[in-house]
Image (tube, rainbow, N blue to C red; front, side, top):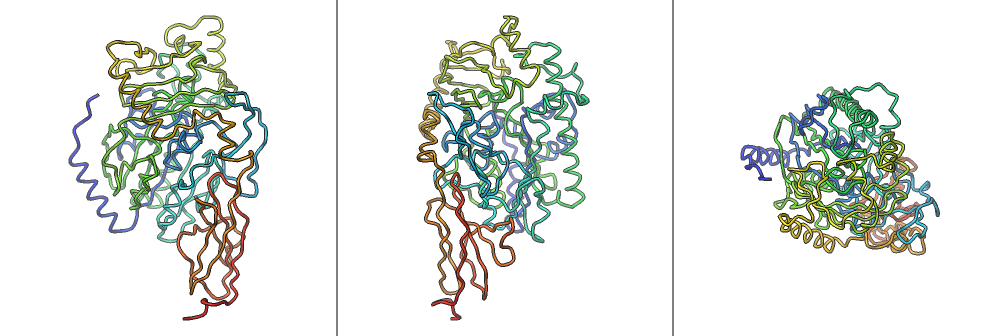
Length: 561
């Protein structure tokens, strides 16, 4: 599809905005993180329901029309968001590795040797925490080092336990309100109302959407059970909109809308079959809207390819922090906005709970290319979790009786083609495979090459059986432990260090010792008389070190100079 002409007024406004803000205080940033929704909103052309509060954010903000997750399920996707890295490059691509959906205190971080999952060779996969390369950090640490107060309410699901260095505050009560006076904040509020589980958990609740008016994807038959559950999806979005309205109202009352940048995004596509866990457009395309204070960029749309792993680098860029070179994500706003937006969005699908598969995708905004590395498996595999949704069980039964036709029969294919190619302009529901079309051979070769190059570039770990992958990260299937913090006093400064490569260090001082809040060590600390200091070190995926105490007894070099 043709790219629109550059809006010169918008570009000029952006330059002015960032020049002003780089010279004054750093802006607050707030994420409205939602679960499991495709762009089923009026701003994206879907008129099934009304969402006035999300519409307000869109009218007052910038809407990204080609935003994609890196995986069609929460944990791998969220691992890419917190690290700015492709899940397949850091070993976080299998769903899910352990009980990481919420933060656990280091002392409560335990793992089961067995919980019923097998890898591609039938070997036991225990619970584990992903261990990325040592240079990979949670992007929030860069914000904390720059003076931001970071809070997450409350979901993590990073495929590893959130390091104690990642957030100032985390949990159901976490809020920006606990920051120091005048301190800029980065706050996340996770809304779970639209999650897949709410389709079956809320099926007896009042229906807000009109089931007769909601759009039914062409890969579903138009039957009562489908209309009921599709209606529930839209109804849950309407409830989400009400929650967002309350959040916006509170920000307005507190006077924070004037200096807070708001991001609205979903962690992946919708919650139903051929949406959640899918590696094509239906599973990866998400809504993404960014609202700036004072109407900056209001009502504009951007068609550039954006990945959710770009969110972290973009927040850093808005805060005046240059994202590190190792990140795959690119800033799409701010002082360090990339000059080379993504040409493609890449996606992955591997183990989903008990179902083991492997597919990769390339999306350029119009065309979707999928490579299936296990074509002998069906497209719609059995998965106990999603079969709690009524329509899923009905469709499986209809398929077994041979009653499905058209798009529904297509997605229930018993084996998959090695390659899939879809033209979203003429086939938005991805049910007409063009991989064998002579008129599309050029596009097929282009995207096939793009995928191969990408897999080599990022070192796709999907080719490593999961049992072996765990052994690589946890030798002998034992979680490695971070070396304890060592202290070195020089003059009036004390330096903290851990001998484990890639560690981050947290510390507490004086009356703060024993509390839940840990400061992030990022520069030498001033030695004060009778100072009490404790610290512990953590590397992502490793066991957090024991707490060690600084010996503040007088020694050479500590006395007054």
